[in-house]
Length: 410
Image 1 (cartoon, rainbow, N blue to C red):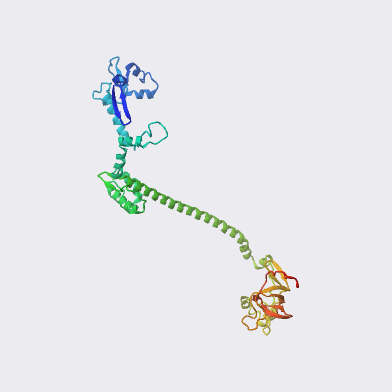
Image 2: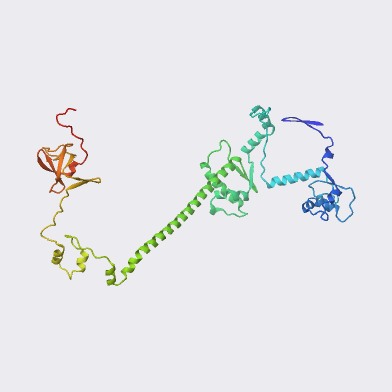
């Protein structure tokens, strides 16, 4: 019996029958059951291949031999004809397998600590702090923040972070791997001021013969810059693809519209290609000219030999000595969608006449409009028993509040 004082407390160990419990041996009778001549389960035969090879190697094996259950191959032993391995050989074999696995993998270690001593949902700093010191977690964090805990081969570094460097300047060959790493680091150094700071952590790196060593802050900022660069590249690819799809859809819609226009105007084109007599039968009758409207100049020039100016004037009723009559004034006005007749009640927008010493109508005065004047742009307004021609710009058509009856005090 012996005891070891750990950080969590005292632990007792019992070493009695230690070798017997760790022997793990099998008799040869049990191993021979898995021989391929008597066993049809090929996987079991494969598991005991080395033991079966030592048992059936062509020479008579001694009876009663015991095989140890071990990952050690019998061909790798110092004496190849000895099928039994020792505990030390098993320990070295398992340790070698573990190291080989760690080298080819990226392990993450999990440290388990007790939050308190009474197994409750509480966090006791007095219980956790000694465990952190005993496990050297604080020293590990300090080493990672101040040193270079991350290392990568030049080829792996270039493959992961080459998008941070100018694409045309990268050589991407085995001989120029170091030059490509330096080019990537130059691009990273240029982009560092735009990245968010990581507190007091130092951003540094160092180049070796075959590896590049990075601090924790440098690795985090490299990953951040790589993520942002890939995000911008993804947005650019999406924008180009969506533009291509939109242009393709627009061209398809344009072809549909052009086809519809062709189908619409094709019969008209075919009718124009028909003989003149057939087109006259199919076309609508030509409308009659409007009175007092001169013919178009192109028509006069085309038919100058057939018509002279006098005949044209007689045809369209044009008299050079007398101007055409003014169209009659309307007997109504339109306000919105309502047709209003005369007389109308309107309000003066400005005083009339404007700028004269004698003002006849004042601003805001309510007047009665009798109708349109013979003078252009004027309305006939009744004022104090006489009529006055007032421009329509001075009058505003709006509802007038009702006037109280005379002789009633309000």
